[in-house]
Amino acid sequence: MNTSKNINPFYSLLFLLFLLVQSSVFAQNILENNIKKHISFLASDSLKGRGTATLQCHEAAEYIAKQFKEIGLEAKGQNNTYLYKYNFKYNPIAHKTVQDSGTIEKQSENVIGFLDNNKQHTIVVGAHYDHLGLGTDHNSLDPNPEGKIHNGADDNASGTAGVIELARYFKENKITENYNYLFVCFSGEELGLFGSKQFCEMPQYNLSSINFMLNMDMIGRLNDSTKKIVIYGVGTAPQLVSILNSIPSKLVVKQDSSGVGPSDQTSFYLKNIPVLHYFTGQHSDYHKPSDDVEKINFVGEALVLNHVISTLKKIDDLPKLEYLKTRDNVGENKTSFKVTLGIMPDYMFDGKGVKADGVTDGKTASKAGIKAGDVIIKMGDIDIDNMQTYMKALGKFSKGEATKVKIMRGKEVLELDATF
Image (cartoon, rainbow, N blue to C red; front, top):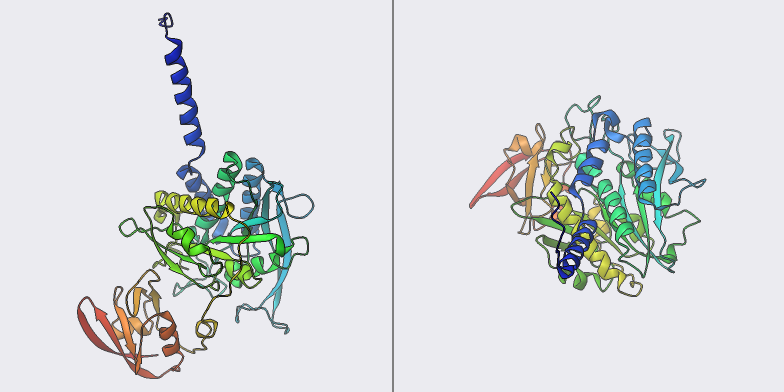
């Protein structure tokens, strides 16, 4: 049926404008289906946990490179590719680089794509894509990990998917004009930040040209009821706190000033570059085979990525950030202790003490009767106010020693006997 006669040109124009607006809005959205697609591939059993320097880790790198190419990023790896290979020495027992004959040498690769806005300075957006493989590197928290696939959907297929989706968003929308953007997916993070350390030593990247680095590690498990995230590094530049405070969001943001932490932003901070690190919180599947794609909150990750976009837009409007050295509690965070309690701390907890988000079966806490949700407020004669005092307290004990652990369980205070 032909119904085209006598259409008012004014309404035709309005309709065209409506279509343009709708198209523009769609283009500017973070797409949950893209996030799901990337995480589903990276955290599939076929990649066998993306253990650093394995064939499957390389397969993951090739997948990321393919996405960067389809998006239209400029290749910034070696030989006009997106891949930058590097060698590192690794001690599988000590989990650190050493020079003795007990180390093994491995090769892995970072994946690097560039959005060139022809500007003097660059913002780096990064995440690590490696994980624990088949549980043979002694980092798993499963009691019998070897041979089990550790898919690492949250840690850190979620962050990797975030980098890819942000790259697409910024390339398509062309909304940032004052900085170039370098999108980097690092390997080797699980074995000691090897990929990001290597990047920061690459001679072809002048670190003085980098304005800021934003890292995403474990951003896929937003709690729908609390909507809490932690953003680390807010003390590494004077403007960052006010920027984050000015962003309207459904998220509840906990800020931490430190530039040092167990992820790749640390490598940049130690090179005097301001950083932020986004994190949706610890969970009981951390470093276990159960960290699977079915547990990812895709809607929640989209909320996190939209917050990242708001942050980057505000930084893009500012002159080059001034680096600040923060009080990182480095000495406290590196307290030497010979024992662990066997809990998974709740890093979102704002109260006094350390809340157990999870308890590992068979470890000290479990044997003592500590349960998930308990808040540790005293260990021996040391009051536990936060993670720093908790680690200081652990540093006082040796294997085989016993102590009293005081906890809050709801409104009840309990004192339990614990033996390390």
